[in-house]
Length: 381
Image (tube, rainbow, N blue to C red; front, side, top):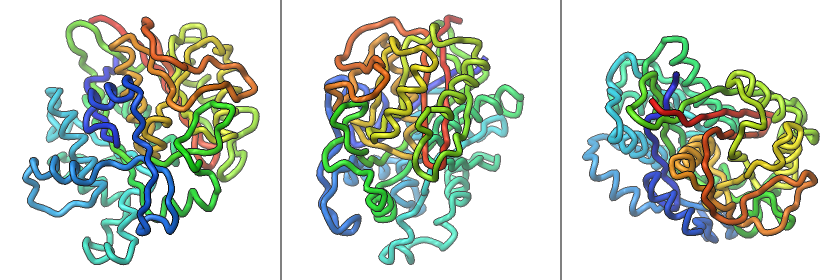
């Protein structure tokens, strides 16, 4: 069995999982109007990690080297997760997987180009910076597959443990809101002028967010209640460079593969943590895929209305929130959702409520037709 040992979430709503969970439970939204011309000429809504607190928390680590904004987030996230486990990150039996879409992309900006060595911009270098900081002897796996990167990283980490290559895997991921990223999404005209509204009739685009997350998996659980990885899957619908399949084909197949590996079916799922970007096509496609698996009745949620789309961190921080929901047996409402706006009547959570959660599904989709899914289950050891 592959166990979820501990996790961390860093977003605009907090610097650990407990802070973020409490904020979402209270209905807080970290998406604000940003007026920063170094990011974009006009104001736009986004969810940003508090820079002052980031620097304060990082200063406590007494790091002697200079690190980028994203590196600070990732190091803090991994450090906090490790505090709540007995995993030895310096062991050759512990692997690291980094999930990110753009890494240190802000180093392309003229005012930052001279601050770090040129290769710091590359994703492989970011992975080695992390491994070097923590003294891990293994070559880190760097995974960058659009917005399914986080879920895919968890699936691959579980596979590496299952194969016996590692006993423990530290899965960490993050992205920042940068000039490059904002300009790119603006060119797609995919950003909402207000905080996003997943699955809602009035949804008109996504909200960008930044953050980092870490999940530690192991082949050894703890006494008592545990949550285990049951199965994962991925598929590419090959529909369009940015638009998902209108039939939900890729997402449907990814879920089917995850179910097959997990040995479950739609009737066994207690809760779905959707990708839920609040774009017209994504939410529609996900609802179709959910419906094709006959899960219209299963409670569905999205956390992007709370802290935006965190790109390479999304699959990790959203899975960590789902794991906490399972521990608390609590379904958190989808911020921004008011009136159903998809063709398949899926059961979007519109109010926080108690429910026994034993088996849950995480979905993810991204540019290039990418789709991924994973299934987790609660057990007692």
